[in-house]
Image 1 (tube, helix red, strand yellow):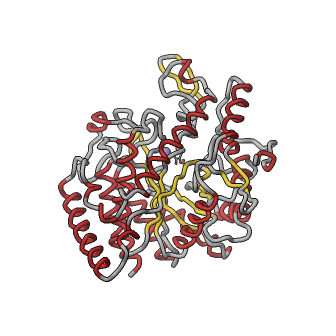
Image 2: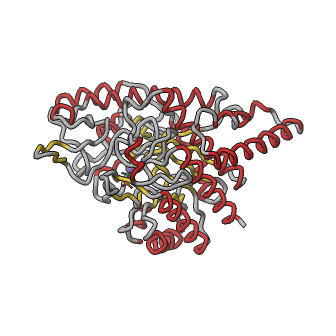
Length: 445
Ligand code: PEP
Ligand code: MN
């Protein structure tokens, strides 16, 4: 059933492309509306229950993937390496904290990007900015950069193919905890972290054998829940994939299990907030350093007036230098409201800078320090540091500096592949997981 009439069409939607051909948009939307759902409402509800657990400190949220997925990047190898990386990080976090980890990919739909400038100028030529493969192509020609709504249909198809592989990997035995050793194969391993990882994998193996000998059915290790998520940015796409669930009669955005509203589109009177309010998925909202306690209260009132557990996640992205100063008043405001939210730390988006060579980068130490600050604030206020939100890839790229491999500014050119923001590579991701696992274990003491 079509759900388009639910939304207030008179509101301003920030960060939308200027599609040159309105008829082509209409026909892409009609096609999307005829497609089957990518996820089921019941799965979104299950995720909500798990988010509620994380909000009360009984689980930990791990969300990771590309800043911007690309159509050409949706290969079996790339998807498998991202899943493996997330599964490895989850195993590390779970092993050291003894908390269940909710695994969420910034995957199978993360194709659209907000931009600070509508246009980009190179050598005197000004063209529309790249807004993600959902909108245009990154190549700097007039033809490539012109927004093309047919791409929205390709987003659906690429998301479906990605999700199909995700489901095969996570339900078909590949994600079985007994495979924890094999996830390390194929990665150009950094000796320090892979040795630590192998040691942990051995111990997990022993624990599983013990459980099996005690009568636990080994089949129960076979499949894991893995959820999809992306920023709900291009509203034509998200609305076309919003359907009324026949079980509950409620609308769900069936393009992903979890969607979030970005820092640049969360205006209270804007179309994205209206969209988020109407759908019944679990929702995230990004909060940058300018967020006030009043903003937070207003968002809660708007998106979760009935205080439904698991409905609302705040993803803070303050920057390492500001997290300890800016987060406390927001957490206090939520505490005062009596509302249950999941607090997640995005240590990426407040820590981006331009390297002397011109590459956009992030320092591993800043990423780590922001997570540390996040844990410190929650410790002080008696609240739960519920999870992390990371831009990562399973490949050995050189996009963020530092970490065990000591990637330098000069190294960035070696393998910089991101279509948008710099991602942690496989080793940096694993290293971060070990360090966050320590924080999580200490927090529970
Ligand atoms: C992102 O998550 O890639 C992003 C653009 O984040 P934010 O809205 O926090 O800037
Ligand atoms: Mn990003």
